[in-house]
Image (cartoon, rainbow, N blue to C red; front, side, top):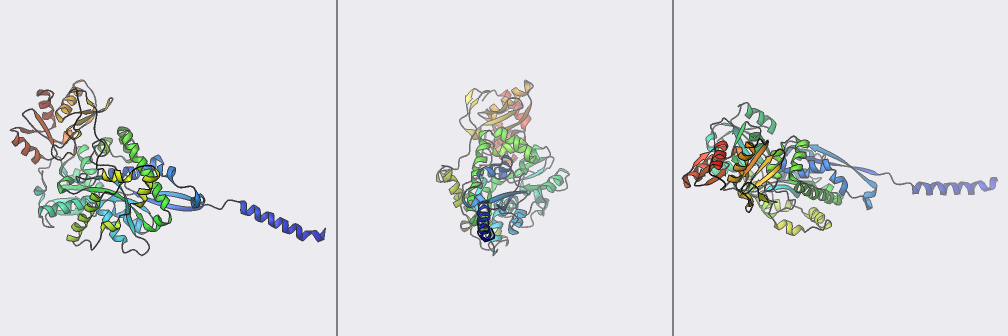
Length: 473
């Protein structure tokens, strides 16, 4: 028996080794930090929707080298872009989303980082007209134009897309750097100070220039469309992570594409869920992301947006806030292109398109089809849904009809006559005359149009009465 022990020991060792090799390798855990801005409506499909619907988990790779990798997702919510860049620089976040000016600063800051660069890899949402950022005053304020605010106390989150809008507007108008008493305040602080009349105006990014008027204490006097420069929120990634785990970045874009489709499939439900997840009123979410909304959810990196980023760089350079930076070298759309290809979608066709999804259907009040979405309107009726109408006049007429029938109305929407941006009807100025009811964001625009049609400028309630008195035009 003793002579056979070595043979038995060897056999046992081989068996043990085989059993050891048969055991699955311990999974490597990789933490993926994603910096979101939940209350910034432009970024919701790139952040909170993906998170709440668990879309990234659905698309994360699980084969090949990823069979032994477990990804731990760390979603971190921020109220503005600059802190996202700080966290990315510290490698606490690998993916981040923010507005155009903070994005550029992100790319410029990473240029001097020896460990990793950042790349703009996709777009959350954009407006070619520049809508989204805006400036508001208290509803009781005597000010209606930027010129009225000379020497006044104006707050804006410094380093934000709205700050960039203010700087561009000042340069366009030839205002000196001290034209306003410009101070930095977060959206929350600026909103409170405006409500308490501690400041004269507050400029902010999506959705605050719509949210504060909707909540009843503010009035918008300037919209980013007046800068004539596209604005966007985009997605940046650390290159060290993207190069090591490219399939994960591709999976993120598949999740984003799915989130955008979920939004468009049922925009009313989406607005309601986004309100639940972010606290931003559904009616405000819808003005940006609903059909014919002021933002287009499209992840492709359009040349017009890169060109706008180059203009933003010049704005910052003119103020001595940035040295040389080339946005074209900073863009990398290879990951999103791969996502489109793997989902059997045509990236180049989407890249060439600048169309949004639009209001459509039949106007049940004026009994006509909706042929021009940007001349149309909508009324959100509590029990009946969001109903489309073919013109501002028909929208106001239907609004009056619903009221007369005792229906509860959440909000009505119309479109600015010259700029085509979606407005809350009760916040608009209406030029009324010769059977025409023309809505405008700005009082001065309404006054100019009223003069051309020999009409007059009316507020919402009087415009509703005029639309009813004038019949279904």
